[in-house]
Image (cartoon, rainbow, N blue to C red; front, side):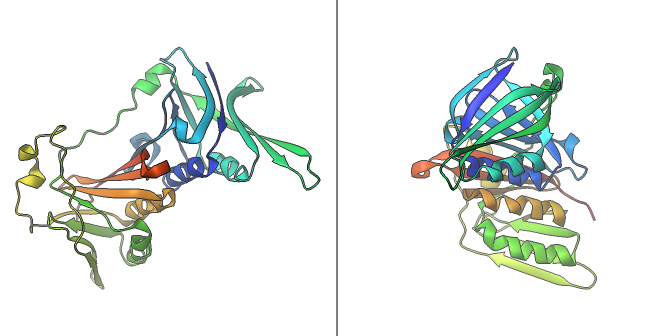
Length: 289
């Protein structure tokens, strides 16, 4: 099992890692020849929120080499805090190399960070993150959730604008209700014995289905009154954790509401020339009264 690469975009790598750090202390980094996957499964958290993300290796790596008996895939369980710290310390480095190595016979993700001193000399910093390599049976158990088609899907306002509102609502209630319809209306609401607060957005976009991918006539969102709201009541802490994904500078965020089941958020990460290079998918279950 081998993996070695130069990191060419530590800032974006760190931003992807930071979003998962807000949700779970440890999570899974899956390395493949074409993509890096970020996984917070149901086993990693108590609340039920899950995150499954990926980013193209060509966007963050160069001279990337990976080899394993498991179809050239490597699954690593690691501390998100340690990974973020190492990547942040490499922001201004002249060269960063990441490789899978062993230290005292234990696996580590080793970062060799080259910097230039004030005198012009090269200074090499090495940071080792302890990791656990998942066995093929353990990796096989990682399954992304299967969810029904949404009753409503809508493009969200900028997450940076929602962040402050969501944090204020969390300070007043344990739950937030997300509502939307197929006419571009989106609502955040809390309702307790002592306070009721609602923030609404209009003129948003309900993205159209790609007819080559799905039969739109069979989609619940296409067969309902467009003015009819669908809603989902979720843990306010989970929603605020999702909103933290604004740090990846998403190009678009789509909210899908599955009534009586949960919310699915698709966060799309842009690359050069506005091309899509990655994504994060959040699954948040509903909370009953």
